[in-house]
Length: 254
Picture 1 (cartoon, rainbow, N blue to C red):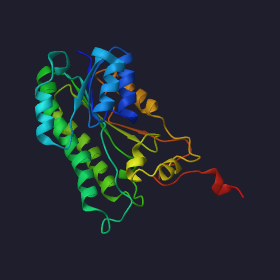
Picture 2 (picture 1 turned 60 degrees about the vertical axis):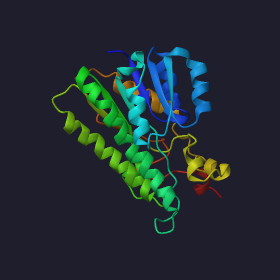
Picture 3 (picture 1 turned 180 degrees about the horizontal axis):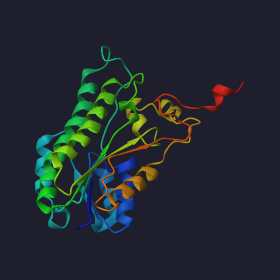
């Protein structure tokens, strides 16, 4: 094993936390993102342990070209962490901007497919590898305003299970990590840059931190190879299983 992880959506939140954790523990990290300045910041921080890959995972040609041209020290990917995703929901489907809906499909569904198609063949040839995807509680229970985002994450979860079927008989493993409310920049995109609305998303909730998810990822990929961790669900203690069911103190006070 060469201890190489490829993380999509590495420039913020969970992806960035995972990159920092794995690099600190001796792994090489290839990270994709669209914000070159943030990739450069990570490169400065992590040095030669980090390979910045500036492209959009929703662009099939860009994905295939970049993965086919990895330098030798990053080419043998042991773990593919399909973390990148976006939510531009908030409006009913019949009122939403069709470009927003297509962007979610392009990033959340096509991006995962393209990366898996580019990376898994090499894992099969080497007889080693682990594909980890990022699910969402929204994919399990209906939640107002999540429509296409939730559907895209349901696709990701089932794809992860079907990859196990495709790869049965090989040593490759698959895991879907399903976090509930996590304190990242994620709501900012959904709220179209409205910081006040994005911050209310976390109000009184004590949300999961990106580092919590990164530690969960580390645990899953470092289990003995005889163990496949199929799915992991994480939620804040104040959030129950329903995506919108949260205990918020002001609701219970005068």
